[in-house]
Image 1 (cartoon, rainbow, N blue to C red):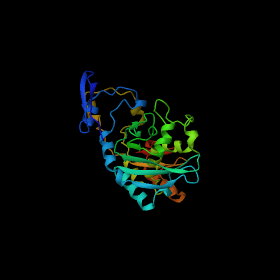
Image 2 (cartoon, rainbow, N blue to C red):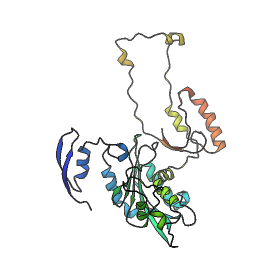
Image 3 (cartoon, rainbow, N blue to C red):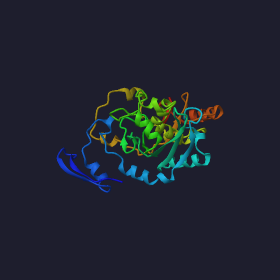
Image 4 (cartoon, helix red, strand yellow):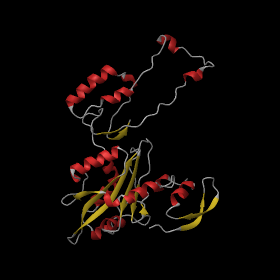
Length: 309
């Protein structure tokens, strides 16, 4: 339910204006406002209202994980979701569809009882290589300092924690400013909850973990990516090319248009590699790769994380 609001604000031109918001007009009105606040408080860009609206319509059809953290701290792995359902989610995520997962975790209490905490996690891959702000919301309150890692790009994300056991635990860790879930704020949670710090940390990173789960590691060599590398023949000798060039009137003829492209997303794990896991396939890949590619044009690829090309 959205409660109508009426007040004053500032538009993109810096002029004070009257604002009236309701469920239908809030999206258009928020885009018309001037967002010049701090990025860490999510005040530098309009919130993704249409994305959030679409997520809410999918709440009843999300896929649930198994109950995590029953014997040890919760961990999101491929075994957390039934294989056929996970495969479907990964395919939908790759096709830029909104994917929803209800993450369930056991929350043990000091009195010997164990409650079940739930968080709804939504993610959508896009064709953009920009970084979008992700939103963590507990009982209608945006926890502004929580988001995905800086290197996660092209993904919209939303985490919803509704009234219940998990909301109670996380609320106890927020502090008076309600900007993050902080395990150092232990005065209240340590009176009620058992082994709670690892569970709070787990849900602070839940969106990153879901995105990684939805982006499986490629185990086969992808030869098609080498077809996108190319070189332009340089006419004349190297000596002639090294001479200082005098601009001419027809220089505009050598200005090339930007080549449109769609990012291709891969997940890199462990040691530096180029999208292969098996040693045999890796050796075969490099043999073909070296024959067909000008290596001086290749970017270096290393590290761990999700990347787009």
